[in-house]
Image 1 (cartoon, rainbow, N blue to C red):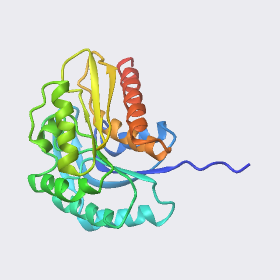
Image 2: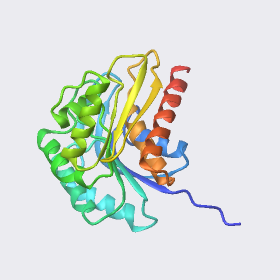
Image 3: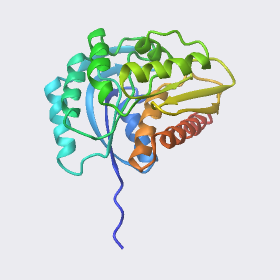
Image 4: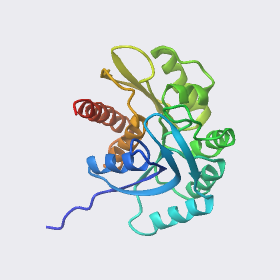
Length: 251
């Protein structure tokens, strides 16, 4: 009996020299969830757990070349983007996705955990105007959702309002991850234009947890690659990230 091939997912993200986020985390997540990974490197960063020491972005022409190579044989069935660094990279992605129907999960990485800006204002404008309308879903945390929606988010009710605003302004489904809010549980709120779904997991003591957004978005992509619906993919990703962080905490 022939062996069934694993589905392929693509990550477009930066290289984090500390290994705590970006391409390394995305590829590890794909592997853990039974998906073969490919990558497009959008930037190389020099990072520790507490600071970003430097960033070198990838030229848009090289982004396009990497995408062409990734799709030239056994193309990915889903893609996930993280740190994009510049408007040029966003525009190159948008031009490529104008010609594709491959589902795209966008983790809108605007800043590092330590506060360093990782996408300039022109890049944010290009993200909202050009790329998000081509995406299947955008997965901001609370600060990112505030920046994209222009709304203040202090409570679950605010999340519910903001996720609908993101759908209207961005033109794609949105899920806001609530780890930045307080409470005994972490809430994720998904809205796809028709249905609103909520997913809650216990809050772990400790942290802050670096790379959580990367794990979540790449887990959503991996579950979509396995054929799950968006709501099922988000639910499974929420549970998987919670379990993965519990393992890290227990080390």
